[in-house]
Image 1 (cartoon, rainbow, N blue to C red):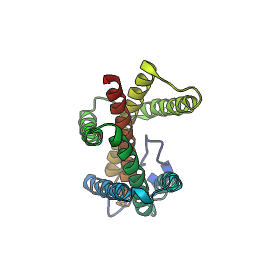
Image 2: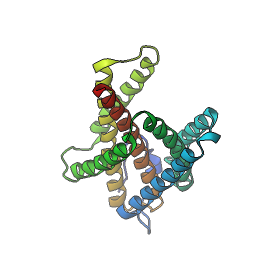
Image 3: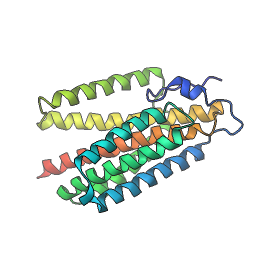
Length: 233
């Protein structure tokens, strides 16, 4: 059985190298690894908050760069995925800690609300996926890729022509929905890997991909909640 991925973050070669193993990946294995990455990111975020005085813009930028490289390397090398997955969680935790602190300084209670909403989104998307309401296939993945490219281009345009008003609000909602829909691709990859009997090491790759989606959703929800708060004021 050939293991294929609908999520563009994974390379087909990476998934194929991990198939047909005597120690196959399981749903619980992926869940445990994901929880571990989240715990590492949470600890790193708390460290960043309590050591805020020692942080510099250069260190924050470095964490972003290393985190990005870790995702690329971790999702393309099954053997090194555990190392790069942990490294990504550490770097992303530092960034999330600072970003969350900045939002919390302007909007009271926004961080707990964003965290709770992210968990709810994850559970709702898992329910929708299990009910097979949306067919996750190559066409679905292609639509999301096009949407992702559009969001990136709009982000670049906003650097020169800042968006404001209802249009910016609409873009933020669409971006949040896009981030949520990427969870379907993660669920599909996990399902395919388990059904194909892929090696348990692939669980780190799948957990890393799921972690990336959850971080994206959390950041988008933070931004959306901040927009709501500004509109109320």
